Image (cartoon, rainbow, N blue to C red; front, side, top):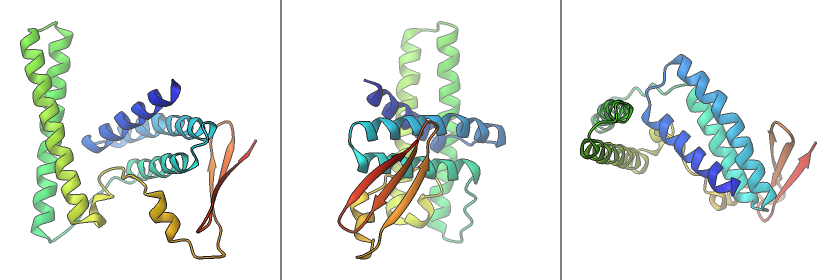
Length: 193
């Protein structure tokens, strides 16, 4: 039961980071929240003998840490990318405003119909935002990695490992250290206490 909760928590954290315009203090807070959460998710996946999913969680955690520690400042002369980035910025502001409005309505026990309508607008705003991120990811993958945590395609990654090569990824979690051992035809996880 802990695994689905950890997966949902990671999903929410990644969505919040993607949607947010995070200032210095917020970045520190995201970092404080994300490390133990990704440690937990990775550990749970290892315990359930799901090494590829554990490696994916590890990679996503590292992406999130990179996004938090070095916020993206995309400079481009490409008008299509600039337009997409402007839409993302506007969508972030709209989503933030709707989220604040919804929280205020709930705090003051506002009209249930107004709460429902604002919730629907918020969901629509988030959907539009993520559609724009996905479009940017497809059309300009170089820039999309600076905006959100992207899924890791383990099979694609493993195909890039040359024969007779072993890639070792070390992940020091709070309680244990994990060694991910990847070759072109095998994948193993070793645990060091």
